[in-house]
Length: 125
Image 1 (spheres, rainbow, N blue to C red):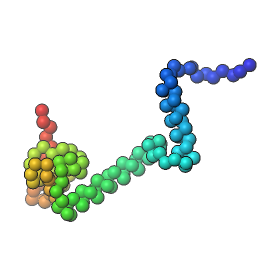
Image 2 (tube, helix red, strand yellow):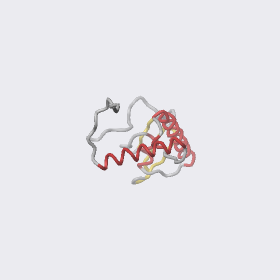
Image 3 (spheres, rainbow, N blue to C red):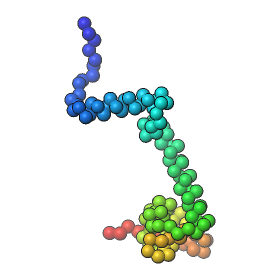
Image 4 (spheres, helix red, strand yellow):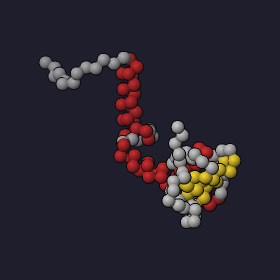
């Protein structure tokens, strides 16, 4: 007599079955070290990746401030964490000033510039 599994069969089409087999093979190859597939790694590395991205963002912010390099709106959004909605935006001790269309300069906020009012990012309705 053969032993029967307690698992119930699942109806899969050919594409799904091939995908499952391929995924399992890629996981085994990655575990053996034969292939580098970072997207197959466990979620335990998610914290490490988040810290790496934060460090990179802080380094890029520091470089943008030190050099005074012109930045695009997308770059300012990435560095500040939100899209700017006014000509001058202050967030987290940084000030982004619009130079011209899609050109921004990033600098540190001075103590005299800071106030209790919120003039940063406004949601457009």
